[in-house]
Length: 140
Image (tube, rainbow, N blue to C red; front, side, top):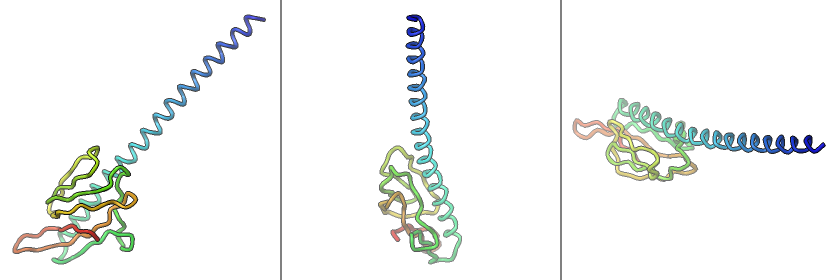
């Protein structure tokens, strides 16, 4: 009878270890998926902004494209870690160093825009000065 009880103890210990490992690796995977989701928002923002700048660049002078909740173009979604986006010349810089800065051709602006619920509201305008054509970004 004592051998049966001793073997049950080892079974319970083994089960506890297996359950702990499942919980540990499951939690690790959930955190990894959440991080991947935030990186996806960053890449989508970068591509959507680049596309919007290209679209407005080839339109007529004075053309405006507004990204806001009340316009046809909804605000661009950013990772939840980013609270402010700064535009300096054609460079886009985030307040969170986890995300790399990047450049967009033909974009100009010297402004920092705060995000609201991980969304960025802004206005793009096609500007012609002399023979230079560029897209200016400003708050909507």
